[in-house]
Length: 111
Length: 110
Image 1 (tube, helix red, strand yellow):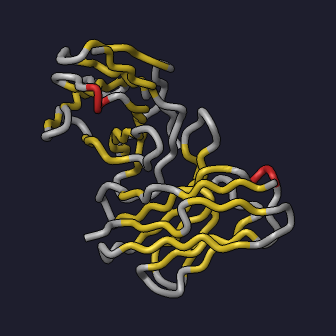
Image 2 (cartoon, each protein chain N blue to C red):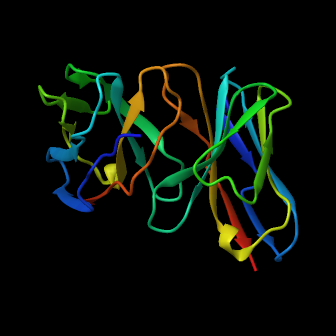
């Protein structure tokens, strides 16, 4: 049972490039989330999804897009990367009234 | 979302109990108190949660004040592996979002 798996684990981008971060969960959870964590700070919610085909904005959604075409996958896209998006990105999933399970994170640097 | 207040950092000796406080004076009747921790270079992991009564599990205990305006996470015997950032979070009973503050950095000395 892998839990929440994030791909890739590390990535370096140049300003203006685009990329997609993939999150996969094998626990049949309805809800999935993308957070970012900057040094010395807690996690901040970017976007989340309460079910296949649905997404919603979190606290810091600007510059990001998401898609949930399959229940087990949640994709986070950066269309035109900016240095301010250098961060560690965490994906999580859960179901109603259950704890969230987190992946190990993707470390993204934008030069 | 209701806010929580935690000390920036705490220090403990190995094998001794640790009491991590959290204030949540604006908590509503439908808010659950959740604790997560984040070990270095890892994602957060769930520790414990409760509503009104004290709770125990294999990782920790949660003591909730009678007026629910504060709570304490208790690690009964701290180990070096317990060194982490501990987050106290309020979560709506049927809500899904977690709002993370800066948390408490716990350092454990051998």
